[in-house]
Amino acid sequence: LAKTTQPVSMDSYEGQEVNITCSHNNIATNDYITWYQQFPSQGPRFIIQGYKTKVTNEVASLFIPADRKSSTLSLPRVSLSDTAVYYCLVGDIRASNDYKLSFGAGTTVTVRA
Amino acid sequence: ETGVTQTPRHLVMGMTNKKSLKCEQHLGHNAMYWYKQSAKKPLELMFVYNFKEQTENNSVPSRFSPECPNSSHLFLHLHTLQPEDSALYLCASSQPRDFGTEAFFGQGTRLTVV
Image 1 (tube, rainbow over the protein chains, first blue to last red):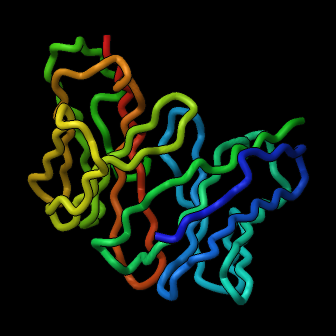
Image 2 (spheres, rainbow over the protein chains, first blue to last red; image 1 turned 60 degrees about the vertical axis):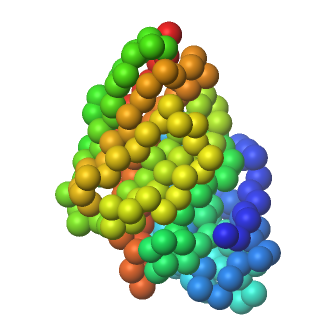
Image 3 (tube, each protein chain N blue to C red; image 1 turned 90 degrees about the horizontal axis):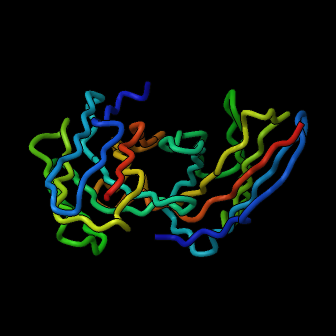
């Protein structure tokens, strides 16, 4: 499994854009990049997933450079309710026995008024 | 509502008790997971089941015993626990496919060992 490195924490203010970068230098050819959000005392929630270039949904955007050794989750115009821990996961989502869904320490994002 | 239901939501048990946590999903997923999350710590993967077969045991003490009778149900049997086992226990399920796989988590069971 590719090891991931994320900042421990980030602070922001309401209305700002938050960008969280995840490093995964040993990402494999078949690996996808997935981001989850977790609020206190709740299970993580899927945000976005991608393989290369850019992916956008109603919640966030995911930017993946050509070498795929890093990725950036972009949260546009955050609000107080976006305060949470954000996890970057890298793995082969098609390999049923290898997709262990292992979480790292994540990035604690705190949004202030 | 994620489609993954965990019961009970809260559990207090003594160190000599035996209890079970239950996880149920009717999403048609073939992979199910147990996680432990202690206060202010990352999720620790405990067990993984694929098509009812255990494919991962992440060095979990034997006082935790998983059971997966079918693809929709997952249990975690607890016995002779220690106070340090107090944590939020989370269940998840996923369906590996070519693209767009996401895992769905239950709300968790908050376990307190006294």
